[in-house]
Every structure is written in structure tokens, then in C-alpha cells.
Image (cartoon, rainbow, N blue to C red; front, side, top):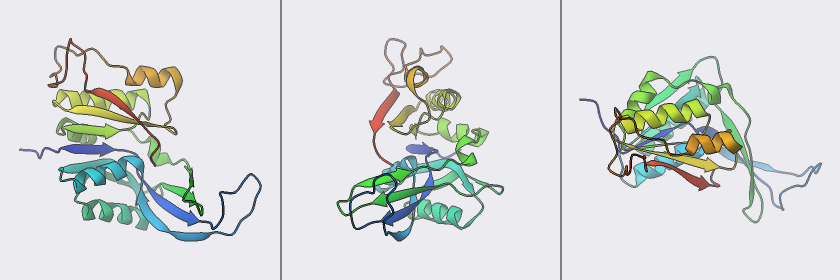
Length: 211
């Protein structure tokens, strides 16, 4: 019998390049001294997945990395936190995504998000199978098809589906509102215990400013 998870995170993974400056965050066109603190595992969905595991939940993760040292760093960190990287896919033709995090003397920060081809990979059958075996599937609104596929897989398995709608999510405006709107349950869809009046209350969105 396939293992069932309490929590599955999908997407939202990167290596953080943490840079510190000993003054307020720079303004436009300023050049200031800085120091590289280190390269750390990051990504808002990945961070939440590790936090779930630390709380004692059986957690798994699905996403994409390159075939490089940064990929090893992320995979090892998942395992160190007790997360099963069952859905972590290595893509040999790409570099592992990274972000640049700048912190100042007052612990304020600025986060730069370089795009990556790995942010646009299609979900695999294994990702959807994991979603169908998870009590909670946690991701972000990358695009409407992404949301629809993961939500359907989660609900078909009797699980809940949660979106983290932070300020930098790709989906915006009417497209975002349409993606996160509650959907009518199909007669073929197994209702979650919280589904009422034929509407899935488990389809939810959480606003966040995390990285």
C-alpha cells in the first residue's frame, strides 16, 4: 500500500544567497559594501514543508532542481528535517533556482527572484499521485492549470488544498481570483469532511509575505 502523507508541499523551492549590509537598504543607483553570509536552503513552500515535519507531521515535497551541488544541498536539507523528497525531480539541463536575499542593519530585507526554467515545468503523474495520498497539499498559484490539477488530485484523495498567495505569485488579478474561487464538487469527487452545500470549503487561500 502506498504511503500516505499528512502534508505535501509542491513548488516554491530555491537556494537563498544571503547578503548582509551594515546600513539601511540601498536606494536606486547606490553602491554599498556587502558580505555574503552564505547559501542556504529556501523557498516559501519548502520552508513550510520543513516546518510541518518539525511539528511531527509526515511531510513530503515535490518540485524541481538542477543536477548540481545546490540540488544536493536542498535534498539533504529536506532529509535533515524529516521531509521525504519523493517528488523532487532533477533536471540535468538546468541550474537549481536561487534567490538573492539582502538584509540590512535593522533586519529589514529585500528579496530578488531571478526566473528559472524550473519554475515552469509541468506537473508529473508522480506529483499528482503524491497529492492524492496527502491530507494537505500546500502550494502557490503558479497558473490556473497548476492549481486545477493539484486541487483535483488532493480532493479526489479526500485531502485539503491550500494556496499561499504571497505578493510575488505569478498569477494576478482576475486570473488569480478565478483560480482560488471555490469550485463546485463533482459527483465523482470524494468530498472532504469540510465540504458543505456542494462546495469544497477545503479550497482555501492564505495571504502571506513569507519567502
